Amino acid sequence: MKYTLEQLNEKYDLELGKVVSKIKSSKAKLVLLQFPDGLKPYATAVVDYLETKVNCEFLIWLGTCFGACDTPNLGKELEKKIDLVVIQFGHNEMMPEL
Image (cartoon, rainbow, N blue to C red):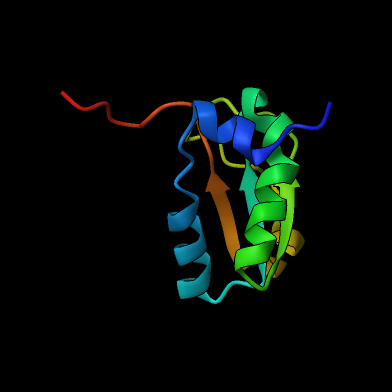
């Protein structure tokens, strides 16, 4: 089954406009995206969308992701090549509204 951005947008707001703005403002050419397991099936749909909005390349982290503090251990050589180290997507807001 191919997962689509439309299916994703029915359930979640990943604030892709903010992602596009951040990539543009940082002038990133290589960006690492990190998704929790539940959103990984949508990762390529997100990349397909972002590639229509910005001129850069993307890497998708397929390793574990246990929350906002769980950033990938990329190794120093790869970290040097990535302009925007992590855009981390999640299922829920970090701080819920009260």
